[in-house]
Structure formats: C-alpha cells, structure tokens
Length: 247
Image: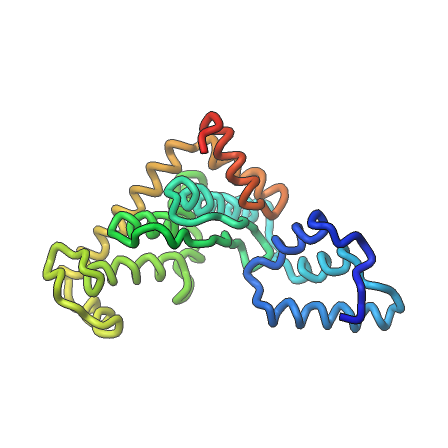
C-alpha cells in the first residue's frame, strides 16, 4: 500500500471498521479502498479512519423509526438465541448496513452435529421471526424473501433431517438427494407434515428462550436500534450481566 492512514493504527481504530465490514468479501473491501483512494487523491489529502468508516456506511438502508425497531427486534432475536443455545458465537449484530439487518456468527465446530444441534440451529434461524411476532405482533416478509432467507434455510434443514440425515422416525435409512427431496415435498403430504412439525418444534424452542429472557431481548433490541451495531463481546456482556454473571 502506498497510501497511509493518517490516524493511529491501533486496534481501537480498526475495531469499528472491522465490525462495519462484516458480511463483505475481501474483494468488496479492496474495491472500496481503491475507490476511497481515488477520491482522496483528487482532493489531495491522506486517507483517515473516518474516510473508511464513511465509505463503509455509505449506502445504508434508509429506514423509518418503525422499520428500524422491527429490524432491531428481529436481529436481537437471532443474536440472543444463537448465544443462549451455544450453537455459534455471535461476532456482531447490525441493522441498516447489509440490507435491513444481519447477525454475523462463527460456528462452534467442536459441537457434535446431532439432532439437538440441528434443532437448536433451526431455532436460532427462526428466532428473528419469532421475536417479531412476540414484540411487534406480526412479521415482515423478509424472513421468507428468497433462497437464503430464514424460512428457506430452516426448511432446508428440516427437510434434510427427514430425508437424508438419518434423523427421521419414518424410514430413517432411506436417503433422498436434495433435489429429489424437494420434489417429493411437493406431493408427499406426510413428508410435508413432518417437515412442518420440525419447524414448529424449532420455533417453539426460540419462543421459549425469548419469552424467558424478554427484558434482555428488549434491551438488546433497544441498544441495536440506537447504535446500529453491537459487537459480540458487548452482547455477551449484556447476557452475562442479565444472568447474574454466569458464563
């Protein structure tokens, strides 16, 4: 790099930038830095942390107060259930930076990927939608908007459990490929019922955790709405404090 950042290169300067960059690829970051450099060369000045932060924040979703609160409730639900189940480590929760919102996680690879792991993972995926229902009283379409949506991901896991992971009580040894399983789901009512039952069970897990930690969930959502982003360690401190300092 020929350009230098004008402010101290301390971790305190890098930390907020790293959080804002969550969800972006290395290529995305390289492209963004090149664009900032070109702009600053024309202005005849050196890059600062503030320039990078402004670039990372550029293009944030414009949200009304109501939508910002709904997004915060949704992402706080994910973050809380991921942490309470221990399925994954939450790196950060954000709203407005990557679409309406995002929770960045790192999987705990030491966990056995058994049926309990699967159901808790599904619960964490569905927790945003559950939180919306509990706090707002309705859900937005975003939970089911596209192949990477919460509902699509949870349904794929439930279908896999019933058709190829060996977790089904009905013909557990019969393996169906993903494509065949999706086709079968369209006309096999019993399979659809079993998949739906798994989704309801996972939703119930999420609902129980959010209801038991109602005040904590609202606290996380309120802070997220106010700040736009919460680091994983900050989230865990909030949870530990609410649980009396338990790890």
